[in-house]
Amino acid sequence: MPEGPRTRLELISEYADLRAADTGEARRTERLAGLVIALLGLENVTARQVGQAAQPTVTFKLGDRHHLLELRWPAAKLDSGRPSDRPGDADVRRVLLSIPGFTLAALDAARGEALLLDEVHLEAVLCGVMSAAVLLERAVEGLVIDGRSHSSLAELLGTSPSSPPPRLTWAHLHQDPIPSPDVKAPETALRAVLRGDRAWAEPKGMGLGSDGRLLVNDGKGVFEVDRRRPRTTWTTGVPDCSGAPLVDGPAVLLKHNEGIIRVHAGKVTPVGHVGPGETTLLKGRNGETWAFTTLEQVDGRPSHRFDLIGSTMFDGPASFTIDFDARLRSCVWLGERRFFLVADGHCAVVDLAVTTRVPEESWKPTPGHNPVHAVALSSGDLLLVLTDLNERRARVVRCDPELRGAEEIVEFAAFAVHGVVAGPEVITILADLRQAPDSPIRPVLFELRLPAPAGFRQMDVSRGEVISLSSMGRKGDYRIDAKTIGRGTGVAFKAMTSDLPQAKQRARREIEAARLFGDHPNVMPVLDSSRTYSWFVMPLAECTAEAVHAEFSEPRPFAGTRHRPLRRLAYPPPGRLGAPRFETARSSAGR
Image 1: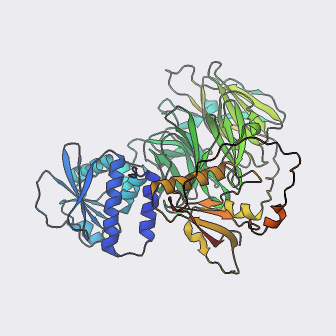
Image 2: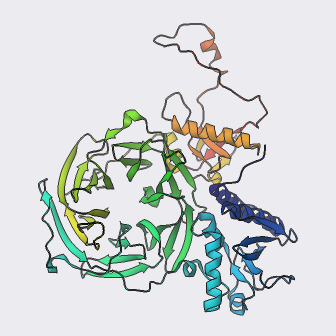
Image 3: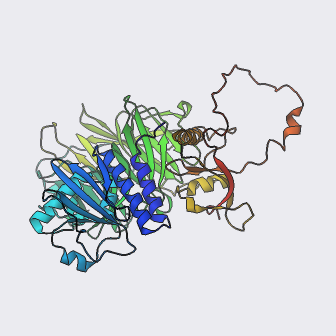
């Protein structure tokens, strides 16, 4: 049975393995050619390999233009940006991809004979930040207009805004008044601080850094708001990003198309793939970054996924698909690997260290309709913002993660709420006060002050949870060793020995089933796994069936057990699909 096309996540994992493999340049470049052909296939571009295996060339057609893509993977940067001598038509576009890149001398000496690409360009296409067609089109523009054979990813995306950032002025200086809020909780104050001019585009989201930096994404770029002056300055001019920016020290993380990029000091780095749909970026424990994405399935049912994002696209790839039959509107990190999920009708808490399933009995009614934002307070409580499009009103509700109680804090006039961030002393709300959808946007920045909160509650985790909480999807975190080693935690490491598609599907079913029902006391949970389901980790069993054979050999009734008829489960004959290899390993987590 032929294997189907590989997914983007599988290609990313293959590329990561290829970078880590200790193989020669010729073999590595040959495998790179196969990966590039498969990647172009995801964009419905037919490509094939020509030339020698040691220096492969991939030929394909985009639009009306044929392309020759020469691949190089030397140990160091190429000192020449000139493609190999090869007879060809003048209408054929020449492209040279060198994974390590090119020396400055090679870039300076490039004569426009070929477009020069490096690993960042390949990784941008792998992550879904840009399609190959768009990347090459913009690279050609850089060649024709500016004479650049090599354009950085920042230059291709465009990081230099052509206009000043949107302006903000003091709210009390405007003549048209802002309706007074209806404060419902004691010791609470909501105050309009800043107002934007009519040149604003509709904001995509707002983020807050640990240093107090307030950033707004308006689709044209990300600008910083200085509330003391007031003043706005561009942080990055990468356009067409969606969702709220996530401040990560001096860098900013954004979603661009289907990928996540890190922007710092004018440099753009692809760091992960999350797919289409609405994505929320969250800060987790010890600086972890999570991407929560709602994906649309073919049958119309939404699918939700958590992706762990590293500093590069190879750091800690871990993905968790959530079984929660609801259209989620917001998500909040609660601590460790626990998340609060907010839907229109109900909410729930999921602990990825235990399971990805959200059973219906754990659902709690959402305290209101249309919850557009949710944030965590330093007290451990949550703040939900709900909007009423008919009444042009917004409500702020405070509750605990278990929804044992909820309290309405304040209600105020708002057509939409585009962002909510919680600092140590004040909650900032970016709202739109226009009266009709076709009216110009009227952005207002509110500050909400609540009574002084207490500190976060601490969680106790078991030994197995320590491994699951530290799982990063990295095989290098485990040492295969049957002997006792002084450090680490003993685990069971299972790896596939067959490349048959049926074997991979079987491993995927086992991993997903264990994650769904891992919270059941009679189910062995999966603690960690690769994104391509080629290996996974389970806790070591306390004993074997042979050890307890005598205990269960005598027939005896099981008190209080209900007997139900079961259909025989279809199970393949042994050895047909390549049974998983079962080994004892040690995890570096929990040392």
